[in-house]
Amino acid sequence: MQNVWLMTMFVFAVAFFLVFFAVYFFRPRKKDKIIPNTLERELIDPEDISLPHRAEPNWPATFETSAGEKAEVRIVSVSQGSGFIKSDTRLEIGEKFQLTIHLPDRPALQLKAEVTWSNMHLPPEKVVNRGMGIRFIEAGEDAVCLIDDTISRHAAARKAAENPAAE
Image (cartoon, rainbow, N blue to C red):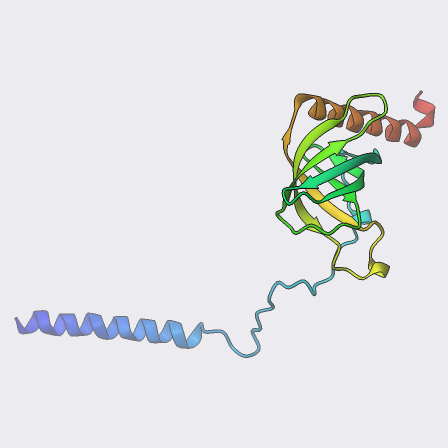
């Protein structure tokens, strides 16, 4: 019985020593500063980001929020599933709204969208186009086909402009 007690005390002493050793020698020091991920880090200019599946259609559109607020906007960039709306109207991130795209050669397209980011809080000298990034939540087949077709035509036009001898 005494051997069991001695063995138990030995195991607890070794465990205590290992925990003390780990806490003492592997704790963060004052020189090991943890830098929080904040908004003050250097931001990348959106114009420097290369997005291969994006087009700049400059479509006129109207949006209506659930509160009934309406505004005339322009869709200046679109990709499959998202876009950028040029607007001075401020919507909160995560706010959902109804978007109607007005095209001269087609009937108006109805989309449900959500604000994913906004540059409304930035000073005017830091903004090229005032507006917000959106994500399409519900898009009908017509809207998906229109966006795909626009992106394809834009990519083909860009490729033709880069390689004029290929034609």
